[in-house]
Length: 203
Ligand code: ATP
Ligand code: MG
Image (cartoon, rainbow, N blue to C red; front, side, top):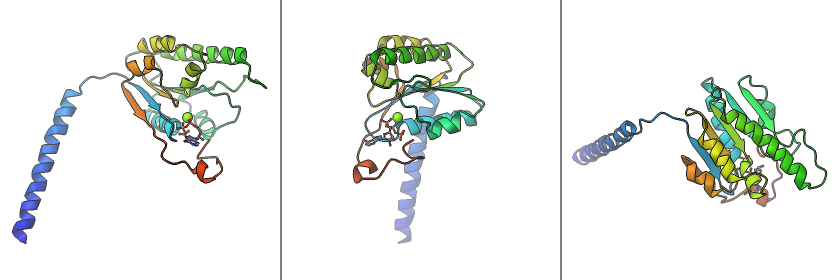
């Protein structure tokens, strides 16, 4: 019995030592220091909330951050109420300040242009360490902004700047230049079980 457990302990130690060698080697070879472009896509719940969680992480390190939410809604979300008061965060919501009673494509384009002009300003400003362009993909999908133009601005940003993009879809031009892409898959959502959207979870 003891022999057996000794040998399984030895096997475990060997496995751990091997694993450590592999991990150490990977850490040694990942030596480049630069900002990354992270895209979160897919139909599941968790893209925007993950991006805001990452921003909280950046803020914990004292990094200067900016958020642009490319959404139409006038509703104040929990993330807006919380992060707008953080001194290191600039928070813009495309929908705020632009009102459209009915779907008006010209007004939407105008709002998208104005929001993207702000984004380009941040992408040219090395003081900002972390940028979040939330739901940007809709602007491309609706034809309000060109994916090429966005990709060009992202490619010329300051080297240390980290950028996160969220949205259900991801344009090929952006996927081509992203460093990290995660797909949030929809396996189940409480909404389909009949649970009403609630503050603190949905918005
Ligand atoms: P979250 O902001 O909660 O991280 P998300 O950014 O991944 O969600 P969006 O596509 O932006 O998802 O949708 C935003 C809203 O729609 C959220 O209130 C979210 O709970 C809800 N939602 C997301 N995915 C689904 C789904 N598969 N079915 C129903 N509602 C969803
Ligand atoms: Mg979202």
